[in-house]
Amino acid sequence: LSKTAKKTSALLLLLPSMGKKDKKPANGGKSKAEKPAPEVTDGADAAPEPLISDVTVAYASPSSSQVEYRTVAVSSLSINYHGHEILQDAELKLHAGNRYGLIGKNGCGKSTLLKCVAAGEIEINRDIDFYYVAKEVESTEMTALEAVVSVDREKGLLEAEADKLATDSSPEAETRLTEIYERLDVLESDTAEARAGRILAGLGFSKVMQQKKCKDYSGGWRMRIALAQGLFVNPSFLLLDEPSNHLDIEAVVWLEGYLQRYKGILLVISHSQDFLNNVCTHTIWMTNRKLQYFRGNYDTYMDTRLQGEENQMKRYQREQDEIKHMKDYIARFGHGSAKLARQAQSKEKTLAKMIRGGLAEKVVEERGLSFDFPDPGKLSGTILQFLSATFAYPGGKPLFVDLNFGVDLDSRIALVGPNGAGKSTLQKLMAGMLEPTAGIISRNGHLRMVRFAQHFVDQLPFSKCPIEYIQAEFPEIKEIQDVRSILGRFGCTGKAQLQPIGTLSEGQKARVLFAWMAYKCPHILLLDEPTNALDMETIDSLADAINNYEGGVVLVSHDIRLIAQVAKEIWVVDTGKVERFAGDIADYKTYIRRRIQEASGEVKK
Image (cartoon, rainbow, N blue to C red):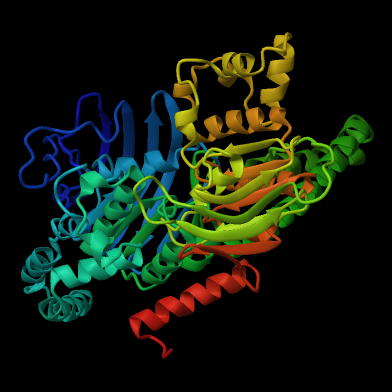
């Protein structure tokens, strides 16, 4: 089956996406019938915005008899998005029971690939139901618990699948029927609300929070509800795009454990190497418009890739040496004596055969981004000090009580603890954006601090280009080339400097803000979830910049690897207190995992 489609009108699709596909033509010919619209949830009055538009997709699918049971198999896959070719003659093949991490540089098209699958642009087997967690749930009157239970369709789907398999006597079908009946037994003894409640609890929702209306939650918390819906549905094929972005470390640890037990096909995009290492059984590298497959998690992929590239370079060098030797021989003796000329002709044939057979390509190292934060100069002693500081929001209970600690230029602190405990609020108190309701927060009179906020996008003027933004912030910079240099050091280069900020990718916006922060030349960096929009290479560059920085750093992040790279101290923010943890971030993660196991009864307290 071949298919090419151009989508410019709205798809009849509600997010998150879930559905089953009709069978492809049995004869393998072209299908001219219109695709049925994806299913919509009950009560939908109008079609929502399209999941993806202006996309052209072409591919070849094997006939149904050639496809393994519960396998996604698509070959010769090409995707053109807004005139940009992101895949060309690639193969997409996914097997049930495998958890795939999809990796690649920012902008290579990872999210576009997931959206094409979810929007039905790439048809998959009818025996596979899928769910794509695309965006936060709507701001409605439903409670968080009701929103999760509302997508409960698993039981009906399983019963329908069992009916279809009843007449199939193949070993695969019998195995699947056993799985279905075992799952149906669980669903009969386990109410939907209880199961939804456990998932929400794992993602950080207390019983009180589960009864709170969706409209009363921020976008980040509504994204957690959307993730809970995807886990609750328990589809055959689950697609997740940066699922850990809105989670604290506790919720990330729980999610890792949950996904490790997932038995369907998981395709996940994540910038967190630690998350990919703990969840994925396979890795797909999206590079040069192809999909390259590796067994194992991210670290295994890196070892395999580096070994492969080393072998490729050895082969390349050997072939180039042989080619040079043969060309030199041909040039020297091609017109000599008859005997030497025959030998030269023989080498010429050997060379032509080598070229026809394909030569190893030279491995080109991807150019990494390197940036730094300037030396702010020295300030003596403790430059930021909390003295019996207490804080409460107006009309609320105290969030912090009697805090006593200090921060200096040598500080490398990671703040951890559950969402809502006050990590971001603590940073705002440090920065002077909030003042204590009792006690004192003392700052050196020459202290400069800047804060990278978790929702940094809201701080940037979308209508201005990066050059105009920097010029407005720092009018003392007169030369435009100096402005370009400031932005360029953080990877905002070329046309991106002249585009409206609102049209830049999230990663590019982050780089603009980093450039702004660096020019402020702060003594203390306050970083609140700085990695959400960054690719792995940029995160490593950020870690290097922090380690080379001469000032203090207070970091809030769910990225375990970044914390491990830069933090010297782990401070736990919870129950109104800020306490130093006795250990590193790996020890803290082990502690959290054991707490989760104790709460679930997996281990004794």
